[in-house]
Image 1 (cartoon, helix red, strand yellow):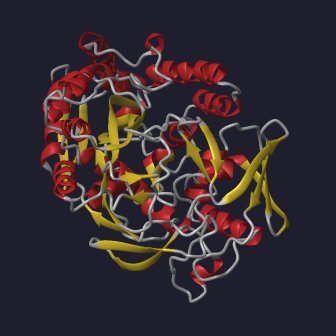
Image 2 (image 1 turned 30 degrees about the vertical axis):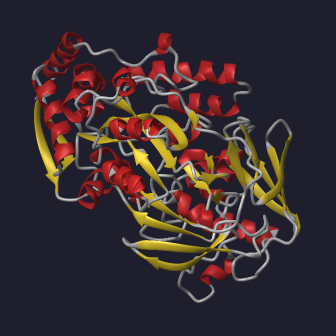
Length: 523
């Protein structure tokens, strides 16, 4: 349910209003912004205050989605990740681990742990503890746990510093699991008293946590990578992009997660802020409930919905036309974007034809669109309602009073026909979120989409070798999605994890999580 809330919150909170030229063109490159050269002038001291878009309600990694928008940066600071993705090298590199090696064509992965690693309570980071953390995460059945269950055949601990993971099939991108949720290592002692205590192997330890208010962390002198140079980290909830940018300019924040508001993102870059810029496919999608008894069970109805909503018109209504829009799963700027295998093109005449065919077989044309009763969500719902009504649907908007209420309706009760959500694809490891939203056994598949052909393509993507092979499979996934319509695709999301030019050494890993173990501040 929490995973669904993350997706629904992200889409409901779109507050982009502006006139940035790059936003209007819908083209954003993916990568670091600003100087990344190594500086020999590193000094100790300074507390970084970070604006959290989605402040974590709990510090338990089995209950907090490991993403930059939802507490992943906070979790990484406390628990660390076994490996991280190096965007400059385009490869996974050791973080908490000393090394990671594959064998058997990518079907066996061996983790060697660093010597002397300890958790914040002094207990050792050994192979037994790492396996315990894996097992705890998977047992909770959250986020990437289903992908782990479907992929991992077994975990062995031949000695205190070695963890061997055997997969059911080859997967070259398996390290993404070790840099995301499963790779966040929690101490077995965290549950020693019956209640969860945030004891991790990361570079910082918790000194104060007040939900919805502040999280304060202190550097660990015994961190296996060496004591961090920063004197501390401080996270505060700052969900509004404009307010976050203003707080950065006033000096209240040193860094923050700027999400979706392309005018603010453009302004931050123009003002000289550095960081990491990302464009995530499937940032805004229309989930179509296709379970038995729902209109969306008929593929003609799903296709009519997809063909009948113009992403550009929706963008104009919700974001004044200043954010990227489009129906391709992987947008312009993504390494996987292929104009020859694009998404569904807006075609109201074809949509009307398909809808009339369904009506001729007894469908009454009625749809229930579930949305949060909040300005941005209302504008989006009204735009979709107008578009679909114009081709012959009869759309009723059902407003929920909160994200929690909407999440329960969509992800628990399944009482909806269409609802706006997001999947936030990760360019470095596209399978992870594609499986989450398309896999027939995925816990996050709210639509009930079930396609043996798509499941087979997801396995094929997992076992693909080089980028060329992956591109062919991704193109096939796009084309099958166009035919079977698991959801209507409306727009990507733009993310800028921004920081002051005085902050150096911060590294961004998978899903815009920021690592501060090597960071330092000019004094």
